[in-house]
Amino acid sequence: MDPAISQYLLYVLVLSVVFGGAAQFTRFCLLGGMSAYMGERDGGRMAVYLGAIGVAIVVTTLVQWFAAIDLDQTRPPYRTADFAWGRYLIGGLLFGAGMVLARGCPVRSLVRTSQGSLQALVAIVVMAVAAYAMTRTSLFQTAFLPWVGALSVDLTAIGIPHQDLAALVGGGPLVYGLIAAALAALLLAVSWRWLPLGGNGLAWFGVLLLGTAVGLGFWVTGGAPGQAADMASMMQTMPQEGLGTQSFTFSAPLGDVVYFLQNVDNTSTITFGVVAVVGVFLGSLVSALVRRDVQFAAPRAIGEWLRTVIGAAMVGVGAVLAMGCTVGHGLTGLSTLALGSMLSIASIMLGAWITLRIQRRRADAGCAG
Picture: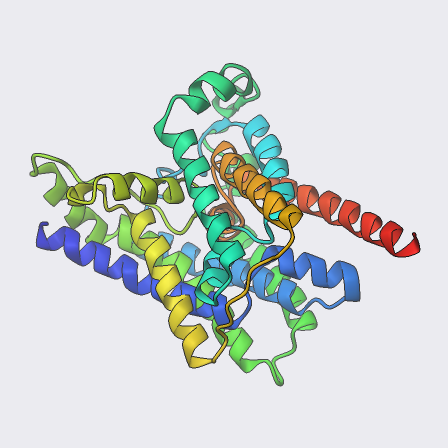
């Protein structure tokens, strides 16, 4: 492997380990945050999620300006003028419902696996296989594209070049900066109210790490390291896969892991996503071991295993359909102020909320019976 590509992947690994460690000790999880707030009106875990988004917006905006990173050309294309509202909406709803059944999104499942959960390990495997089927086989083209492809709007037809919030209102860099600052301030203010600094310093340290890792991910991939890796790749017989401006997401990358395991002798299949998945697991494992937070566990009921498999399959399919997950859209996409990411994360939350409500009603009915 070319030294420039090795260095690029090393940067990605370091950021991924940091992300994974912070996700573990902050208990970073949108589902956990929603469940805690719905049940006990405890907004602590939700504050970690929202705070990380706020930090990601700030760092990504600074990286975009001072490192001259073009976020209009990312993988996946968050700001594309093709506003695929059908994919964002349907994929998000499917993902949200699935993560409730599977008891976590891909990142949370990786963290729980590092802590000894066999159920989470099974969920990750099923998510990965489903994502692989959606990205590396004809499943998406044959079963989804014929109908979901029509559920899209070309923004250029109405004079809008791409879908970031500033472009939607016809503003330039100044308007973009004002919107980014206002949105980040709002998210951080809500987080601060739910999670005061006093007694929660470690949690806020994790929030800073999570959001900063997302912003620096764009610098690594779109800045000097990424450009050097891209130049080196063009000189190779088998170009490195998955290069381009991007940051953390865990939808298609799980499918990339499956593909890499089928081609372990081909280093060109080691993508940003493959390294991110491995790095997040390692970072979480180190944090769990240091904090003595490892306990092997597995459900005993067949029904729980069945729900896990069904939910994980829904997560894998839904994530690829929506072109992102609770991290891919929730942190990375929102940090670019992409409207599609906002619709997608809202759909994920709606799908999760509906499923949580159904579960609670059934539990209440069971207790009453």
